[in-house]
Image 1 (tube, rainbow, N blue to C red):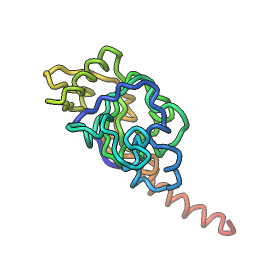
Image 2: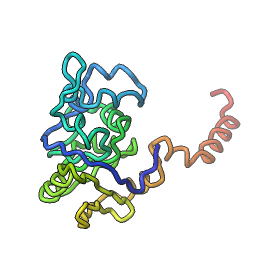
Image 3: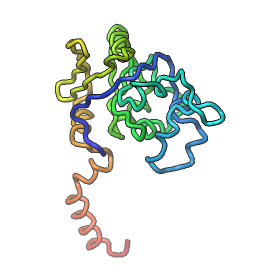
Length: 201
């Protein structure tokens, strides 16, 4: 998993509440088990018309937000079905940070397992960051995971909380498999011992 220490990038305002996982990556794109390629269909029904042409009013189809790597979103982001394809699609598109007042639990957990940082802020802080992201002249934000701060264009900072274990996993780039492999020597020692003591298994 890609490490996350700090990130600077264009922030796109998604002032929509209850963005669910089917909006993030519609069900017809769930046939793959690969984590790559899904970014092309991120927010598919909002980004594209039925003929495949871009909808010019959608924020990610407009400059300077095309290819944004930070999303500032409305309440309850990632609700709906528990599809891990949602963070896969975001990451494949290039999104590393999602900022909202609240997240659905399963989506929130899946973000950390895929190298995306979901940040919970207050409604007032979200509104201020939404205004920053809406400024076409300078929609840039910097997120420092070490200090747990979002740096705004005007020089102000917004602090955020994060579970220390999840923070360390992001900094070290450790998903569930990576965490398990940290105990590789103990696993191999157990397997060797088991093979000697129970050779019939």
